[in-house]
Image (cartoon, rainbow, N blue to C red; front, top):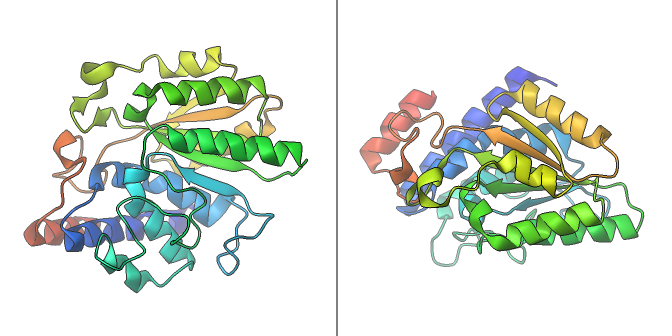
Length: 269
């Protein structure tokens, strides 16, 4: 693993996130920025994928269950070569295939259309079960928000994954502690997240979600686990990398002004 390369790639993805949301004048920067290292590691180090053949049957799958964080996925896909980076500037504009939430029928590399919270992890469970039934060795990765854990459907999916021993399903929880209405503990606490997943039969790890070495080690440990789905609870900072956005719930779904974009770019440089 070239950790310096991954750090540079994550920085590039953060710049793309800020730029595209600034140009669109709408979007979700906070939870996109907090997940940059997770998504960067999966797309640029871990997953078996082929940008030239997005529907390759032998690929690993990625499901962005917290679909509103589409900018981090779009930035990763563009930088990986699924479509031109220049297209990121069309985010949320009429005629663009880069909608506010990912559409698997329009964006190369998107494995599942998401946006309605809870449905992504359910689809990921279905994918993992299908691959298991077909005796395939591919992995399915899913990224959830911690506020998303308030959805009952998440726990139905967790129960099913445990029941069917889906050990090729690896879920990440982007645990930045904030959601659109504030602190997750004040809105509707999902804690203790680790104990809840463990109770449903999952292999559980808690890591620093901005540390590539910890992410790599956690994925390796998840792959070594047999007979259990895995969840990696990643402690992150909402708005990571942009000082005025960090740990501010107000940046869940607000776009920066031109001046704020300039400041963010200066900091990220």
